[in-house]
Image (cartoon, rainbow, N blue to C red; front, side, top):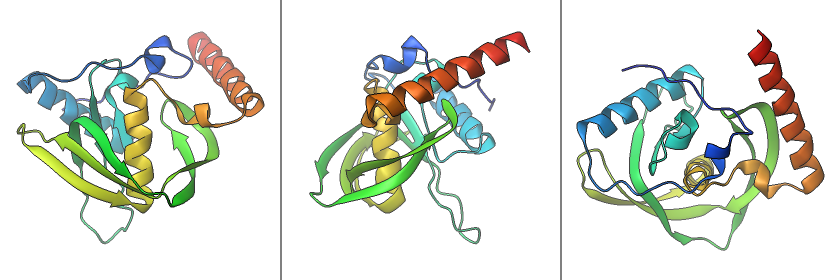
Length: 173
C-alpha cells in the first residue's frame, strides 16, 4: 500500500464524470488499498478515485468514529444510489480536496446504495446518519460534483478563491 497525493480544487479532473469499472483487476484493488491508506492518513472518512487522479468509479469510506469500535473500511466499485428518503439531514461537510473549508449541506438522511465489492460481488445496503452523508458526498465526486456546488455562488466563489491562493502558496513552497 502507498499513500497517494490528493488533488486540490480547483482542478478540472474533479469536475469530470468518472468511467464505470468494467473489470476488477488487481491494479484496481491495489488502488482501493492505497486510497484507504491515503484517507486514513489525511485523516478523512471518505475518498473518491478522482481525488487521487484516477477517473474510475471507485470510492472508499469509513465513518466509524467510536474510538472503541473496530474500523469499517468500505470499498465500493460503481456505487449507485438506488433509493433516497424524503427526510433530509444537514451535516457540516468538508473535503480532502478542499482542506480546512466546511459548510452545511442538506442531503437525504437515508440512502440505499448498490455497488460491487472488491471480489466483484454485487452488494446493497441502506445507510443513514454520517454514513449516508459520506456515501452521497463520495458518489457526487464520481459525477464531477463537489460539496461546494450545493452552496450559494458567493460562498462557493469565496472558497474557490481561498483554494486558488492555497495552491499558489504550495507551488511556491
